[in-house]
Length: 390
Image (cartoon, rainbow, N blue to C red):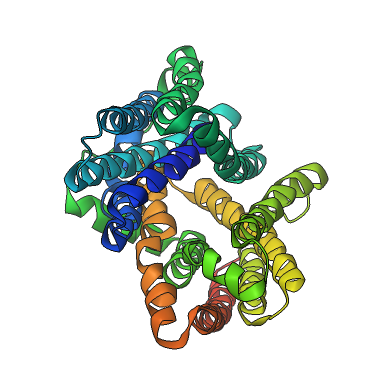
């Protein structure tokens, strides 16, 4: 529900802001403000989750989301929205996300323990994609039925069930059966350096962080922003409908992956399997970028969504299982820097590259280069594995 509300807010606020300002630079700021907080503050957010109750950090994040929705509602209703108002709200929204992300992964670990962690991480990722799949459609319906002011105010209420449930949820530090190991104090930039050393000393942590970091830096989800142009190039009908179907194919593939993998127990978390799935993702995106046929584009995006959820949830599971207990939040925060923060740069590899060689060529080139990088990382991981003692 929280992820769906996040998507609904984007649908309504981006539409009103575009109608009022029609500013491409503000649209670019919206992307940066969404991802850069993950890049700069994820480790610190994870450190806070180590030292304090993750339930309360998630509630603070939800409170920031609610505040952002209500702020949009106020400025829309009074027609006093200025660009700097929008920028402040967008930054608040980005900070809410970085407070929520590491703490939620720690709470998942508290709820299910190690044995069911792969399943829980996969279900959480499935729920995320379900929210992304439902959010645009429900957001568009709310916008049409209620208008932007009432719609964005109503959206604030969707965050409340999670906030209320967390108030008395029997999970977190007070309910752990074993005593927590001492957690290091917050030390600013040194936290990032020390956490990077912890990650670098563990081959599996290093491999999964490199995998997700390279995928986010070189491709990420930047092709989503280019979907209207892909839809125009691939079809001859209603571009809005074609655009929605392309996004839905990607999200539906991820949703089916979560259901299929959870119901069959297939694809147990292994580093080599994660790299193989990431390489299939690259090939699917290359196929989507170069095909002139709309039906094949839908199939390619469906496959891309399926394998993306598979390798990303697998990578997160392996990070959770191998992170030292006393710095688990910091390690997850460092992973979030690579998985989410690095997406801020994918706009340059795909978006800016598209201005020079076209979006089809830039996406194909980026995904092809990522395939080569994944091949090299697979060889590196295999070589390190053979050198480790039995």
